[in-house]
Figure 1 (cartoon, rainbow, N blue to C red):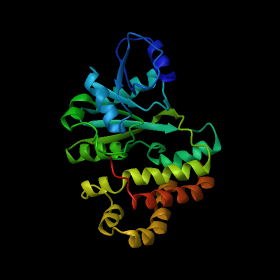
Figure 2 (figure 1 turned 30 degrees about the vertical axis):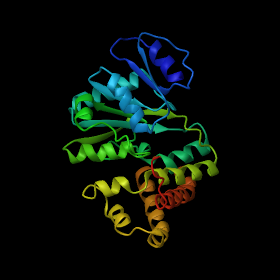
Figure 3 (figure 1 turned 45 degrees about the horizontal axis):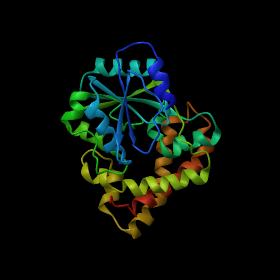
Length: 276
């Protein structure tokens, strides 16, 4: 709600704010820039976002989670970059919780795709803050509403399969108030994310995923999952360190937790939750 208040008070009429929320949530803000979309219940992330897109009128869509704080100026900057790169380019940025030791630890454990320091093409972008051309988003069918998690990863893969690209812009950084400030909560969240995600995206896009991901899908079952868990967690830590350690030395303290978190995530993927 704080974001909505900030955005509605900002100058300019070149944007609208569409908020998708269950009917059970209290709404106490009315503003000409704000459009409320009330749903009968809380749907999976992709379904909630698609309902907002159905109402939105802009040429570009800026997806922002309710626990992310970002200024209108930064959203405009990302949108300008997306426009300059063309309609088949989706743009994301840094989304971090550097306000406490454990919150920033959770950044690397749970949201490593937001933590890069270098501009990068063809990477997975999280939908916590994502800019995409409306026409290409609609043409590709939007987010998959059947997915309980990783709908943003799935969309990035779908975009790439259809000739699009993704762009990570590190010069814009938003604050992530994700609330995971204890190791126990982070590990529990990692396991749940793994259970919600399963191996669905890897199975859908084998030609676009890494050899390591293809190995995961080729060797299912509890025995192989247990055998792969430790080496794959270690390899993941190396990737995270290679991407961010030089620019963020505190990551060295976090790596043991990143290893544990990845192991919990992989354990969760071996026991996926089915959508009801």
